[in-house]
Length: 204
Image (spheres, one colour):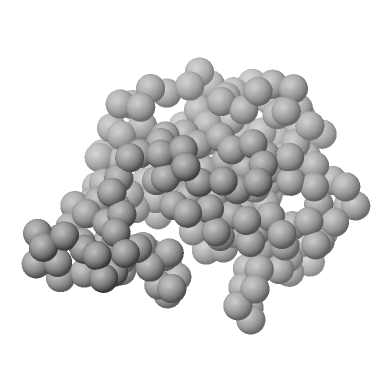
């Protein structure tokens, strides 16, 4: 069970964006997302989490968005590596529980490094950014294969603006309506800008 640690009041959307801007983490350009989609804006969560105090503020605010009865049931936070590791650690700190992560040594998420979940242990799956929800669903599948029961998901940023379905109740700190395009359907003004891959995983 979570230890019932007090959590901060939620931040407003402008407060959250101010934290990203202060960290130079709100980027403009032509970006290739981990899903393979293209976008003119990118939130680089790795930069916003460089400052542990900022990461703590953001994750405490996010923890406060999870309903108290659900929050009290969470006994571990598990994140997909690499992007979710720091966010997951800070969320676990905010909730007063342990942090673990799943990784892809052979292309499929699995729990390694001596991490263990009890059968039926209730878990929060924590991401940094959700775009399509695919990696979240893959991470949840691995957590459940390891014996855990994912009762909720969370992320610092929901790039889908609420359209991603990860199969469990989902709590983002901020939802953004950022346009995304298939690689062969990029508008001319975006196609004129060289595409870069800012994330940590090869594009699909």
